[in-house]
View 1 (cartoon, rainbow, N blue to C red):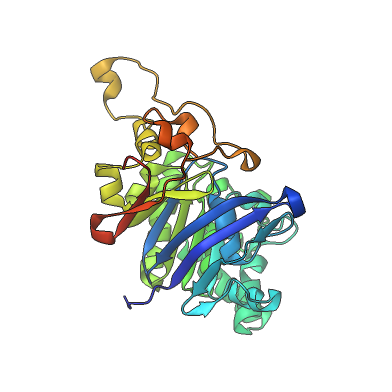
View 2: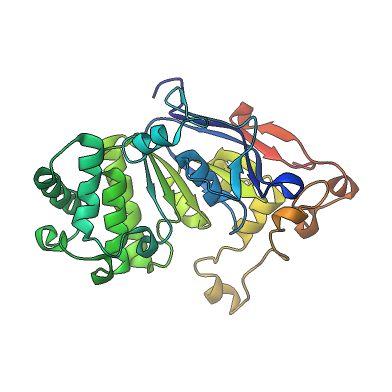
Length: 327
């Protein structure tokens, strides 16, 4: 790996609304990803993970917009101020993305083979015949059986796991430097989830592609990511090596997430019990509380938590950080 990161996100702010009704849905978010690294971004639904991914892809649409001071740099090239045409040339060629729900991300009126082939036509200048042959190879790479036949199928003719494989084939068609995987195993059964994760890991290792893995599944992140950032209410509250986060979580929110995970063998030892949960819900963007944004749900809060916004504290010799008054 080189000293300079492949992707550097600094002071990211994403606003929602406009004028006096403008609010920061994401604020002061910074992280970097090295070449070939798998980096996890975790948190509950509504914490800002997916719109962070969309901002990197240049896919924010009204009422969302990139806030002033935000910096997104890909391989030394600033892309936060890139034109629409420049971002179109980067998407697919330099950055690929797997969306949460392939049934809505894929075009229902086009065979999946044509949707894969389109990547080779647009970004590599191939003719449709050669591109279709490459599409068959791509389906074979993602372990779709009978790819010569499946290349003519429409999305509705495929299972959820097969559609997700098609999304991976599209995202990795041009061997991008960066892959963003937004909840790539949502709605898949456990066996298929494991197959998809193994497939992504193998293909990215083969191509040297870095991965930004966005998920609410801490078990998945622990399995595949070297480092992880925990996000809450639009901010990163803890960012460290995955092994450190799971061994010694420092933020109360991270501890709550880990405590809510089911434990293998717990029922046989302690009988049937309710899973732990974090009380309350992620606040709306327009109703972020004063002080620490987690304070209404935190069992460890003190007076300062409701008054002052906590700053980030370095951890692990400067390799990690936590945003908490009592870290």
